[in-house]
Structure formats: C-alpha cells, structure tokens
Image (cartoon, rainbow, N blue to C red):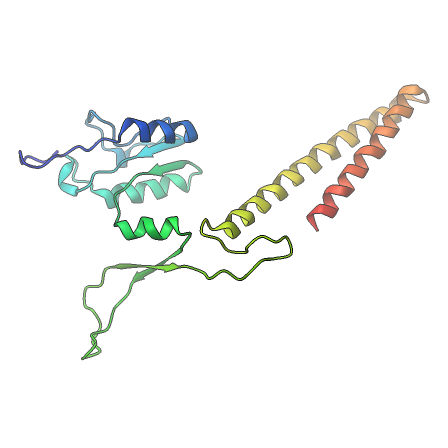
Length: 215
C-alpha cells in the first residue's frame, strides 16, 4: 500500500462484474484479495480458476510487485493447466478493436525510425499489431466468412471442439462393442447373443457415420 495519503492503493472490482465472471468461471482463488491479507500473491500456488485484479502501480503493494509481476505469475500458472481471468485497465481504442473482432499479435519492442534521420528509437515500447480483416463475401453456407464478432475464429474453435467430442464418442462406442463381443463369445447361442450382435452392428454403423462427418 502506498504511504501517500492522496493516492488510493486499492481499487476493488464492482460486485456485479465479479459475480458475472464468477458465475462463468467458478473462481476458487484470488491472488490480490481485499482486504489485503499480507501474502505475496506472486509466491503462492494459485487455484484451478483464479481471478486477478492486479495492482495498478508497483507502489500500491507492500511487496513491491507491480502488474507485470502478477501477469508473469498468471502466465506461469496457466501453463500448469489453470484458468486465470485478468481484469486490467487499457486504452479505449484497445477495447474498440477487440469489440470489432480485431486479431492481435505481439510485435515485441519495435524500434520505430526517426522520420528525418532514420535512426531507430533507442528505448522502444512494447508494440501490438491489430488486424481488421475485410469481409470476403459469403461461403457455400451463405454465411459471411468474416464478421464484426470474429465469426470465423469462433467456427474454427467450434469445429475443433466437435472433433474432440466425436473422438471421445468413438472411443466410448469402441469400448461398448468390445464388451458386447466378449458377451457374445462367452454366452453361447441364444436370444441375448442375437440381440447383442444386433447392437454391435448398430454401434459400428454409428462409428462409421462419425468418421464420415470428420472427413
């Protein structure tokens, strides 16, 4: 916390915003809690779903850890398979670009050139590349390939999730078939064997349909 009386050290998340995010992500850890508990959040083991409202300035915290330190820790925790939701102030044009469906790429520190001398900037800031792709017309489904809400990226994610679910379903069906084949081999002839053989044929047909859909 800052020692200056005219500087606010804590800015907490409005309850309505936190509740909406919590409902979606089910938080079980906050590395920057309020009231401050005296623990350095960059040195702890975060939960499976963490909410991070990092300090606005390095001078706001007693441990001397600023926003960059908490972002580095968030990335480290995410690499362990954990979810981290970060709320951070940005320039208004950043939100405008995100809401317009812009793609973003980190460009590192771009050494901009002086217009007259062509000398590179000696202390460049971090630079982000924003891409607003043009609409390329409609595809065979009659849907625009690119939209203001980044429809194409959403559809690609949806397709990946669909393939994952199809793979899992195929695995379940294959296990079911193996179990039915074992029953048929050990039950001998009879009505139950006949019914199980029919189930095997139906399940195999279902798997074939799944494979065709993936092609």
